[in-house]
Image (cartoon, rainbow, N blue to C red; front, side, top):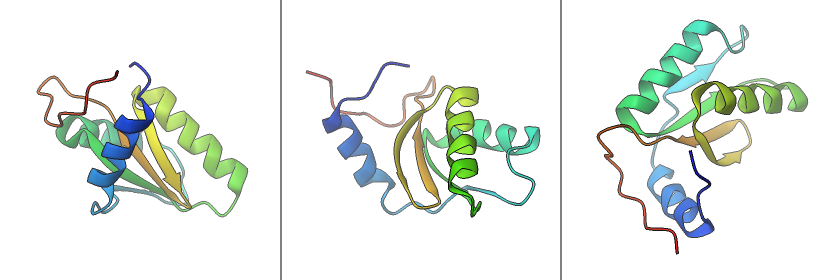
Length: 100
């Protein structure tokens, strides 16, 4: 997926503001089941929040990086334990502003 411009990220952040995390990673970390759930949520919603409840900062970052790598999604932002991800589906539910 191509990089999002700052303006596009701002737009997606605004849309994500009211969202609740659809996937919450527990003590088991990033399992195949959790990845499948994230994949399904991205396909259905395009823009989701994932909560990684790890207290270890480096571990949390590694998990978040792995989610991006495995799903092909774009990280819109990360605040604390919450990661906002965007990946357009074939139906293109979210119309993001065009890059200039």
